[in-house]
Image 1 (cartoon, rainbow, N blue to C red):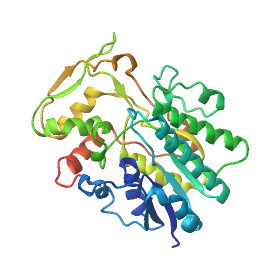
Image 2 (cartoon, rainbow, N blue to C red; image 1 turned 60 degrees about the horizontal axis):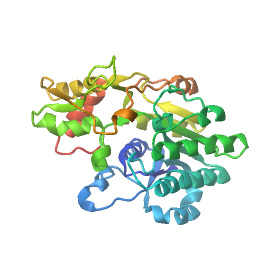
Image 3 (cartoon, rainbow, N blue to C red; image 1 turned 180 degrees about the horizontal axis):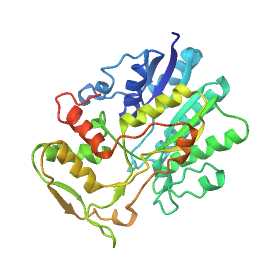
Image 4 (cartoon, rainbow, N blue to C red; image 1 turned 60 degrees about the vertical axis):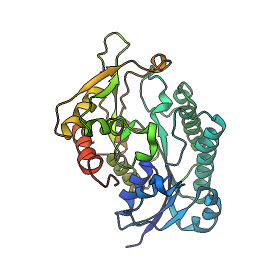
Length: 333
C-alpha cells in the first residue's frame, strides 16, 4: 500500500495532536508535524510522544521545508493558530491566523494539493444571527465576531470562499468551524483549557466546582449552554476529510446538540464516581455584557457532504476523558 504524506501544522497542540494520533494510526498516511514545542518541562512534546511521525519542522523553517518536501506532501491540515481569545496583540493574531493561512491556501492551490483548516465558531460572534454555516459571501460578511481571534478566522473564511469563486483554490479545501472542543492533550493551554479540564482538580480532591451564575432572565445558574464536542470525534472527521479527497467548503463541527455547563459538571462528577458538588459564582466584571448563553452547531451541511457517523454523547465523552486520561498518571493520548 502506498502512503500519502500529510503535514499537520499546530500538530503538537490540542486538536492538532489528536489529528496526528488519528492519522498516524492509519497505515496509508505518513504524518509530518509543524509546531513549536517550547520548554521541555511544560510537556507539550508529550502530546506527540506515542505516535510515529515522519518529520518535524519548526514554523520558521516551514517555507523552506515546503520548497523541499512539499513535492511529497498530498494534504496540509492547518491547525496552527493563535487560539487565545484574550491575546492582546492583534498584529500577531492576523499575521498568524490570516497571513500564514493565506500562504498555505495559495501554495496548495498552486501545487494542486488538498487543504483542510481550522476555522471557529467564534466567527458567529454573540450568536444573535444563529449558527448557520452558509458560506455565501453575503452571509459571511454579515458575521460580527466579538474578538480579534474570531475576526481573524472570519477574514480567512471570506478569503477562501472569494478565491474559490474566482477559480483559484486547492484541489480540495475544507474549513471547519469548531465549537466547544474538549478532551486529552489540552493541559498546555492553561486558561484556555476546556471546562472539564479546569474543574477536574477540584473533583479529584472532592471540592465543589464553581460555575457562573446566570444574569439573564429565563436562564438557570449553570444553565448556559454550549455545543460540546469530544476531540476524538473532531479527529475522526478530519481523517474522513483527508480520505475523501473531494469534500470542500465551510462546515460547522459540533454535535448539533447544546448542553448546559451544569450537565457537563454533573457528567464529570459521575465519571469520578461521586455525587455532584456545584457552587455558583458571579461572572468577572466586563464578561457579563458579552457572555454567550447558547451555542449550537447546525450540522446539516456536513451530513449532506457525506459524514454519516454519530457523535459521542456528552456523558460518554466526559467519562472517557476522565477515566482514560484525567484520572490517570498518563493523561496524554
